Image 1 (tube, rainbow over the protein chains, first blue to last red):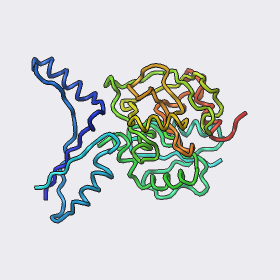
Image 2 (cartoon, rainbow over the protein chains, first blue to last red):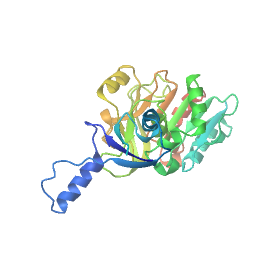
Image 3 (cartoon, one colour):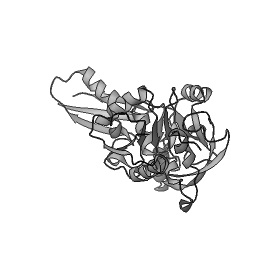
Length: 76
Length: 221
């Protein structure tokens, strides 16, 4: 079973990489971009029936650093 | 005095750290590989060196913080054994939740590699007792992810508890409140981005780092 995990910076945490991407987009002539936040996408291939609790623990213990990041788990 | 340096795949300041420890104690430290599950018996001081453990995969220090030896390091820290994390070692300590906060990409996105002035904020800790309060010292930094972040409540708490050991005198990497080094609540774990082990010999441009090791290793003149 494929599970998608999206790790994003918490609101309020400055994102220098997102800022740089934003500037680069503007440099390419793309106006009208208000903000860019960069995150991480992780695709897990787990055993069918892996519990929500286990997936949550994987995120909290390793995949995200909850001091600075939020995560969202997307099951099929 | 029995010291240990933890070595991860991708550590690159482990030998510098060993030289600094041996310079001060007269005895070579045990080099402990990350796959080990136990520290040498009776270890008195543990250092987590700089470098790029596990290629900085996922987040700097993230994989190292989950390596087998970190459980032993965490237990030792809980027993009061002094633990010093420098640069990547600082990142590992925050990822292992032995220290508060997180180290993010430098605000300017550049790798910063130069000697910077630090202010000694807490001169009472076991690591900093050889410095004067408010003393300015010069220590090299070399990092890409040294931008210290913690929420406001955490920053206020660690400041109030005197747990900011060092502060950058200038803006270096975007760190919250210019924090360069942080102590745990018991005061026996110090994480810092600057490299004191690179400032122990006049030939390296300065010796301001030496007193940190002398204080922490109990060999104050």
